[in-house]
Image 1 (cartoon, rainbow, N blue to C red):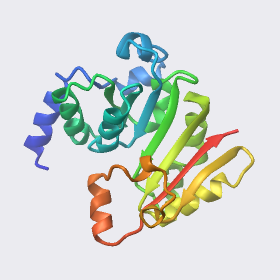
Image 2 (cartoon, one colour):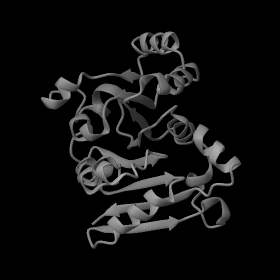
Image 3 (cartoon, rainbow, N blue to C red):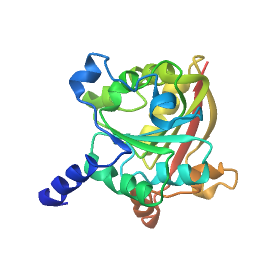
Length: 224
């Protein structure tokens, strides 16, 4: 994407009512006005909130929001030029149960209050394979602590990835009495028992991986 196109999308995002772009400094001060107030001030209902972390173009957020009007969906990504497409489509289709936040995922506990979120989806994140990048993996224990903080007590986390490495790494982390593994499979499109939500939508990158005959892994877990 050219720099002119990116700038155009950044400008357009500023006009979208479903895009929130808090300053990092504000989040670091834990002064974000919508934290703990998403139901009351933004969605104006008490429907459960579902997050898509590293949402990219927002395909999962859009699909799930369309299929579940009784839930609210928020895509989180630092790359606003990517989720511009999802935000624009949501406005065009008058989907008022969708929002997008431009922010770093490590600040999730500054975006949401304790137990404000019902469910989290992590779709095709960077596996951060190099050892020195371990702490940046979105299923690293430090991230999991933040997820547990913002989730309902019985809220679950979904991980869908083409990276067998990240799938295996996460299974290793979850081999711990602090977690309950609800489902795991290394190739969900060759498994008739896969949950419908795991296969109902394919992201831009997922379609590319499937065309290359690359297996897609999926797992779901919750905290105990």
